[in-house]
Length: 153
Image 1 (cartoon, rainbow, N blue to C red):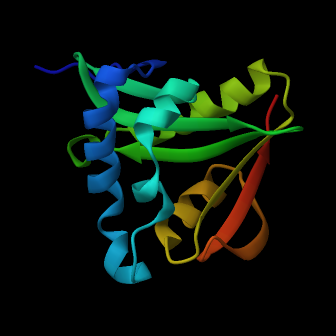
Image 2 (cartoon, rainbow, N blue to C red):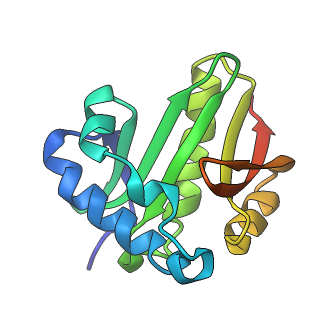
């Protein structure tokens, strides 16, 4: 029987195919709603891994989640969180968001920020349930983005 324990580690180049597959599968349902690929589907994950800003969540040795954190001047940006369809509903998404919050606090930031597309209403609702507050909406890089943030300890 598979375990439910997730482990988070820094991504390595060998993880890039799994990262790309997870991002593709996680965001594909939004393409018809948005009329184009969401930003995370356009990222260069080999470059992001080389920058050291990508972590992967594994369970039983299999990569099932992706977390991309980008440092800001006074905050940490949760740039991307993606969960493999096979792991959706397992709590992995919340595990990754909690890891991002801990990382922000550990790095001395008081705020974790993120954005999502305005059509990703399920994500917006989830972040609001997790204590995030919407700060603003903006058209950026051709996307209608909703910015949210949460104070971390």
